[in-house]
Length: 149
Picture 1 (cartoon, helix red, strand yellow):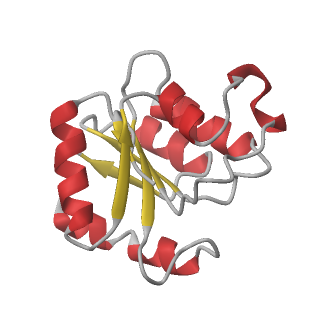
Picture 2 (picture 1 turned 90 degrees about the horizontal axis):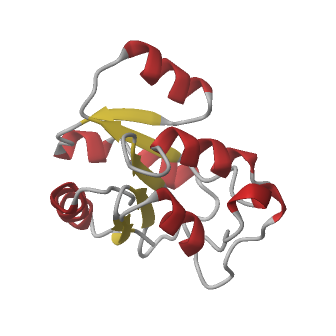
């Protein structure tokens, strides 16, 4: 999970843990890329993922300083090794053009904050269809100051 708001990170983390998901949360897009093993942001597509990390889903806030959730989404989708990981964007802003742009670029969902338990339930199909999903413990990376694994 990635979110620059500590409160939002804690809320999402708690919601995900109710479904027994293991969550790693970070507070910025650059920290999410580092966690994923992508240190050189400018040469992102040539990076290989961190072999110690298995990520089944990335959830990121849209509005963050330094790198927006949209920019993180684009970097993930440009990466040959990470492009198949589902990405969910969340935001408190209900801007239809922004929502459409994120979905067109490959986001699986766009949740409005505050995220609810019913939103988390919508993530199950992405995890069951993801070849990297674990049957015992699902792992998430949420982009917005949360560290998900």
